Image (cartoon, rainbow, N blue to C red; front, side, top):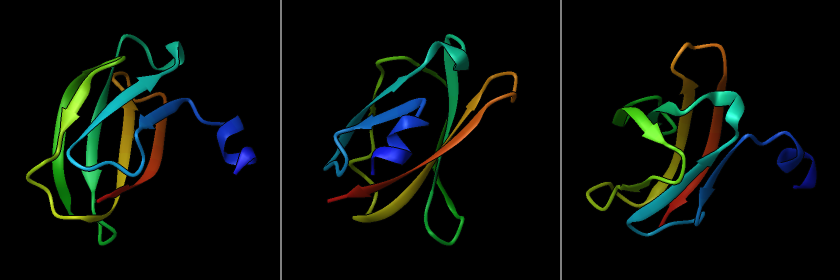
Length: 87
């Protein structure tokens, strides 16, 4: 919805995605972010310490379904969770 997008500092595209997605985030997060991919039960399926703005991430080995992408600034001052769907 428009309200959610107004406060979005991280964009995952495309959403839904098939195998790869691109990450874009505002400068408020710094030069890189930490990414943790969680299923709806909270199990981690992927983690990357340094994701740069514009990076493409490959999750082709992950099952289809809903995931929560947790983005943290490397100083842990900013955290954002984005719900995504893998086709």
